[in-house]
Length: 166
Image (cartoon, rainbow, N blue to C red; front, side):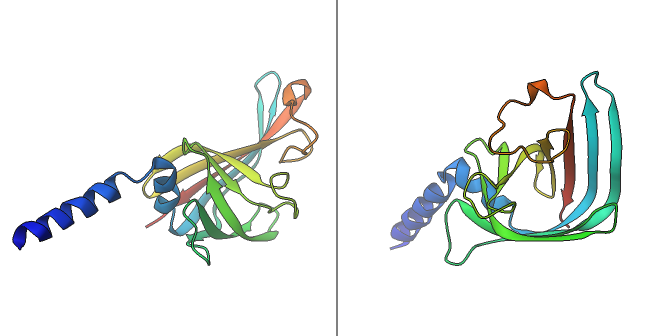
């Protein structure tokens, strides 16, 4: 009888350990995060940088299981205040790529799927600290759907947020 319980326990451990990586990263993001730092900058072709936002305690982000639950999606709320004191509130779905190197906020810029996502590059991926960056052309933070080649821009924008969880 004891052997049956041990076998059952070991099989549960095996299935949990074998969970696909693309499902592990979104699960690790669950919880309340503080936007510890928000930095926005203009990067010129010569490599010089103009920082126009560098603020601490810029808001919070909550990431949680959507309703109904989904294996690869999370729901999030983001309450962010920029350097001008303008408050932005976002609430949508969040998903990641298979390599856990990109985080996408679905349909936050408009109502179209895919063309209106904010795509963040994961610069730092730790249990209680995440650093994400997103980019845009000289005038818009997020590339318009009809522009896939930013190489002819005089400059580009970068927004980096540092998320911290206690």
